Amino acid sequence: MANWLVFLCLFVVSIPGIVVTVPGAITSMEARIKESAPPGKKIPSMRVILTLGILQSLVLVLIADAAGTITTPSIGFSAPFFEALVTGEHIWNSLQPQLLPSFVLGIGGGALFVALYYLVFRPRLDDETVKVMEKLRMDLGLSGRILYGGIVEEVLTRWGLQSVVIWVGSLITGVVTPATIWGSIIIAGILFGLGHLPSYLGAGCRKTPLFIAFEITLNLLASLIFGWLFWNYGLLASMIAHALFHVVWYPFDVRTYKER
Image (cartoon, helix red, strand yellow):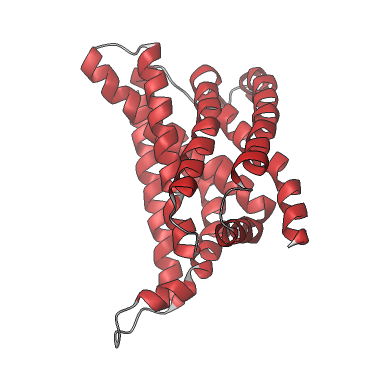
């Protein structure tokens, strides 16, 4: 049975990440938005564009949140920490089992992610693309990356998208199987990577095969970890690990950004 208090809780905790990050992301594309306007056609003010951007993000979260809330009970997935939070149960009992796997995979996976980025992909990407990507990340700051990546993206991708794909798979096969779950994790990871492209391309990154491969490969790696944690421990586990990815990555971004 759908728990609409969990739905409300997840929506509320997603709001700060949207409010903190969306305006900066849109502002970074301001010049390109103006350039793309047809000659002689007046575009809306940036205040209107920012408002619409925030509203669009809130609607997407609402849809993903509702989809996950409706489908997770029938596929055996859950958000035990948030369920305890809204029901008044002992929060520690739901939190404690998630901490060790979240920290181990969050820090270890984050280290692997950073190594692949700096040793494999970054040296081969064109300088303009690297410059734009790193500026976007630095403009978000660590708090924005944790709030949006760690919370909003997990509600969108794990709670919403992955759960719906598993649910559809269970309708086809009649049962939730490990193959269905792993398939959903991979699909969600690929779409998660592709979902990053519009903002990066809109800010000025070059649409090269290597850049697309980079986005899919590293985001798929991250999604394998986050998806497995969601499957075995619950939504908060994937949120913690996702946040830790950014905690591990941030000092390297700061250092390389200062060196430019």
